[in-house]
Length: 186
Image 1 (cartoon, rainbow, N blue to C red):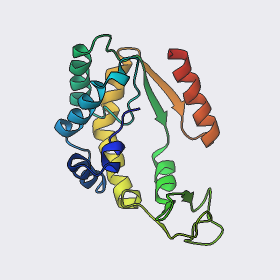
Image 2 (image 1 turned 60 degrees about the horizontal axis):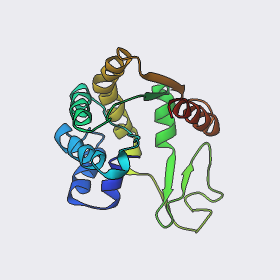
Image 3 (image 1 turned 180 degrees about the vertical axis):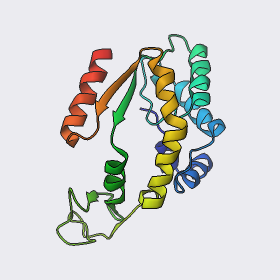
């Protein structure tokens, strides 16, 4: 699986640059994102297939991905999976998320609240709201999605490779639906 989160986790210079954009709800510039993706797709373990998470997000990124895939033997895009969720539901889900500073456990104020407010059930660590989960940042991300990513779905629909999953189902149901779609292409 390929996603920019691995660069962030490694705290590389590239990862720090990516994080600074994400923390404010902005898209990472195409040049930076494409560099990460190309670097990763050229690794030997991607020759039998790969999964991209959150990329491409714009038409220019999709065109850059097309160019990268032309360079790779057997490189092609078989499936684009779109997990559809109403914007208001997304806002509620993301702004209610809390993460343990100590062990990384994730909670939700409405759906999976900790036993004690602000305290991790697993390790007793403090829970915090990620900077990219504030209402303002989520609203910015949704605006960027509407302007830049929604047109991308049409780009891939014209190729007949978009599959939709209802993201408002339960976590287990969404996971099961995603598995079904991916297995049908394996």
